[in-house]
Length: 378
Image (cartoon, rainbow, N blue to C red; front, side):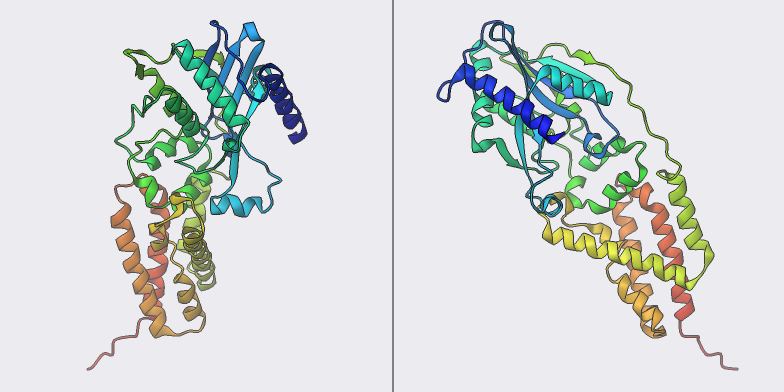
């Protein structure tokens, strides 16, 4: 698959270079059109949020290309670690429009087009900027979930071309990034849960930046340039209804059943295994908060729920140190109360509430089991 993509990209580059040479850009004809392409949501992790690209169509010059800022190379050494750390290099590639459409037809994802209603000199400047980026080291950028992605890069290069912050976010600026993201995980419960507890304070900020494809699409519809609409009415190039997957395990019911079993079974070994898993998750989150350059992972207050110190509580419990087991259980009950009060008005409160209740039941149970009995004096 990668070889096919490489060959198609190379073909498109050679096509451009055959027109332009290495030192000058191809003049677009007066009939050239440049559009923002918005691609629909999919059910693979990489496609949950859709995609944004730029199309340049100029029949007079036999050009119909899509510039795509969402490419990355799986063969990059230490790919997983680079992605986790936040220094994985994404890059812009160019595809023939027909191949781009074939891919989305195969994936059954909708495609929408909004033509930019800008002067000819601005079209030429944007086309030149795209090609200069494509043929230079500027084609690489360090991916950031909110700040640098396929959508934000499209906004950036169009704004650069138009010499100002022409495209800005026009809706949902009064709700948090976390609230904006939540609906995109419909049908993918454990992905929603996972992102709820691994993301820190950054996603609780108001979502004032355009970072998702359909945010850009909706904002473009309300954007003007020189007192005229910036884009034409959106045209539907492909239309598919997104199919929400149904899974016997990836849903809230298995989540509730598992937590009910842990809370009600009242077995010390089950409690210890559960708390041990939570402590490992907490250790991982703390590590990622310091290791990763993804700001979304920093300052993660969810470690109050998934505390690394639960590991100490488990060790004390196994060692049958009643005094300190009791103290650590009470300490984590305090953490739980503080955490509950802190997130009660946040988007992920209800999805973590079953965990809060389960943790509370287990910690109270451990505290009661290890509390020193009060002597009765007759």
